[in-house]
Length: 267
Image (cartoon, rainbow, N blue to C red):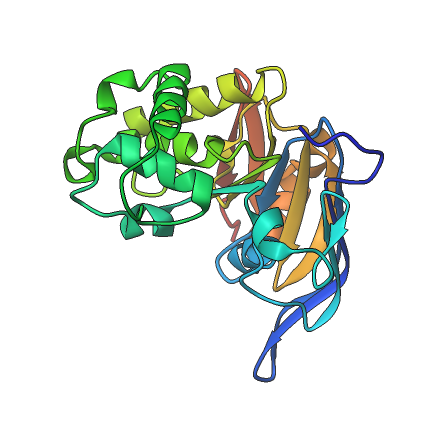
């Protein structure tokens, strides 16, 4: 894993503009070793654009992106990109229906969607070990088309681990999961995050009930700008959530999980 005094992620005055619209503006943010972050914001706040910048799909209009001690525009990005795992609902929709889960996992090593040619025996062995590690050995030979949504998300986690990433980006990974599948998935992520040499997590969501005890810090976004950032207990308050979402909310924490309730408007 990444060992350095440098931040794992450092954004300095990052601005991303498309046409004349600023999607992100002057974002300053650091993620350090041993931290797991949640990125919270409503629709249109810039969460997905932020991840697209971290994965190199969007180039900065202004500012700098440093990942694992290397700077965007100076490092060999395809090599650096393999150190960043991504799990998202959009990626889930891109996988080939006729592909066994084992092959889906192997493609993560090469940052590809489809695998060209026959897989190497060493890759097959490693992928089976990863599926065993995440409790999905029984899925190895099942086609993507017959996997449940929850199983697909776990296979995508396995796929991201195939490249031994230093950072794991989770872009609203619970989208489309039923309540039971969501809770199983969140517990799985919690367990993974507690393993020795676990990658650094960046979990993007607008559902506070998905935030579990593994996360140490939060970045709050609204309208493409940072509202606040810091230790999660200081960020997850009724006042700050009301700012993020533009409504009066009451935030409570029960049994380690957060609940957000809109405050009734008094006449």
